[in-house]
Figure 1 (cartoon, rainbow, N blue to C red):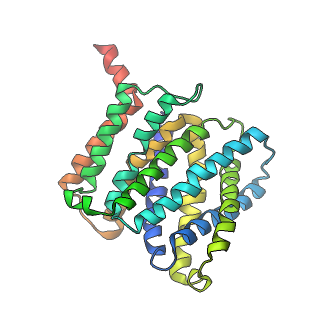
Figure 2: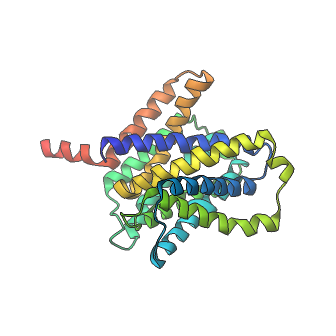
Figure 3: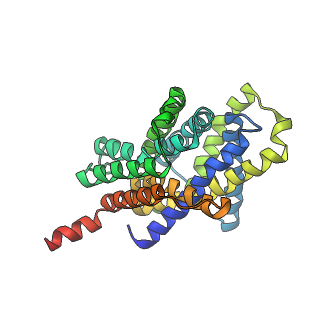
Length: 297
């Protein structure tokens, strides 16, 4: 990965890391399923307008449509609902740690994924991801008391992590000449269509969704943490493939920095240790530094 890819990855971690904050606020007013539907629906509308302004071509074949359908299920419909519900059951720190297992699941699944989109699970990548997860645990101040969190909630976040890992491998199959905005728009539109009959059948509280306490976090979640985030996500899919899921290791770092900047929190020793371990893990996964050291031995 080059410098620009790392910068995009960090910006993506800020946008996706902020989604947990938006969801926490939205859950005070509306249900998890309502949050998920309006998140993808409003993001789809935003990106449709964006694509119309740029006059982008939406002509896709059957194969691409099936890939976007899989991306809609495994990158939106399934994980968004699991995370929104899971967050209502467990603490934010445990949720971040469990979500950080996404790169590990990606490495494992990619090892068995059909070629040419599969990737060999090298020792460097496995060790790097494990060190990164340990770093996230230290960074977020994990303690054994957190194990008392809802088991169902923890399983929901782990299933979401597996779903994200699968989506990244489907994303690698998208043709390189498809604009990232088209990919993101197609995925979000299909997700909205899938969720629409479900939300209509279950129903939602229109009065609550129109309250300012719900509108602001859902708008932030839709525009910043979904629409803009997916523009960057699909750009990274083209350049670094499934390594894009390393963003889940960076998200807790972004959350800590946002807390320091906006909430006036201070840096603790655990933050420094956790940050060092995460960066070490990322260097091992990237592999270039390891190759450089070996070439000098």
